[in-house]
Length: 331
Image 1 (cartoon, rainbow, N blue to C red):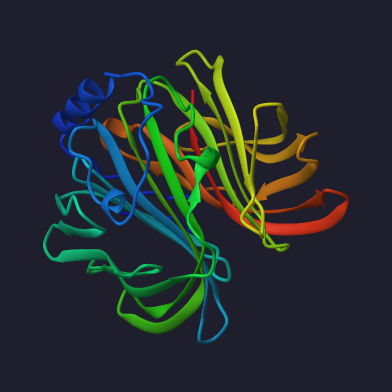
Image 2: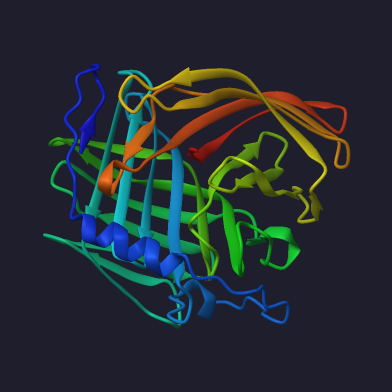
C-alpha cells in the first residue's frame, strides 16, 4: 500500500516470479476473431482460453459530508488485485497491489478474489452488480445499477489494441450507493461508476494511454493510443457512445500533450493535460488530471499511472464537460 499524503513513500514489492510468468504468458498473441459475438450473461464470466483478462471499475463518489472520492478496483486473471482511492478534499492518494487467488464462473459475473478475506464481485440482475472489497485498511460494499445499455466498444466489442485478439465492453453509467470503511472510519457513499471487462490474446509487451470519459450530455467516449516499447504508435482508436445508444468510431483524431509532470520517485514523465480533437464525430476537449500524482508501483517496480480526470470543450457545437479516468503505461 502507498499513502501519498506527503512525498515520503514506502514502497513494497511482491514476488518477482509472478511478474516474469505474467510477461511470458502475455507475450503470446493471436489474430482477432471477427466471427466472435459477445453474448450475456456468459461473457461477463471468465474466458480461460485467453491469456489476458481483467474486470475493472472506476468511480466518482461523494460521502455523507460531501467529500469527493475517486478510485478503482481491478481483478486480473493472473490473480492480482489493484485498488486505489483519492480523496480530493484531503489531497490524499493511496493504492494497494496484491497477489491472491481469483475464482470466477464462466457463465456470468460471479467473481471471488481471495487473500486474507474474500472479495465478491457479481451480477444481481441484468443491469445490476454488487462489489464487496475486503481490505483491512480500505473496505467497501457497493451496489451498482446501470442507467444505460452495455457499450460494445467499436460497436461489436472487438477493436484493435496492441497485437492480437481483443474483446471489450463497458457499462459507462452505473449509479452507485453503499458504504466505505477507510482506516476504520465508516461512511456512506453514492455517485457514478464505469465498469470495463476486457480479454484476449493481445500482447502485453506494449504500452498504452487509455481514456474513458463520461460527458454531461449523456454521451461517453473511450479512446486510446497503443505504442511499441520504443514509443512508436501502433494503434489508436476512438469509440463514441451517444446518449441514444448510437456508436460512432474513428481512428482519425489528435491527442496533443500540453503539460507534463515528472514523478519524483520513478523519474518518469507523464502528460497531465491534453487536447483531444476529432473531426467526425466533431469533438474538441481539454482534459486534465484531478490530482497530479496518481502513479502506481507493481512487481519489480514496474510503474504505471491510473487516475481521475476532468474535461471541458465542444461536442458537435455544444459546450460540454465531463469526468473519467486515464491509464498510462509509460515508455
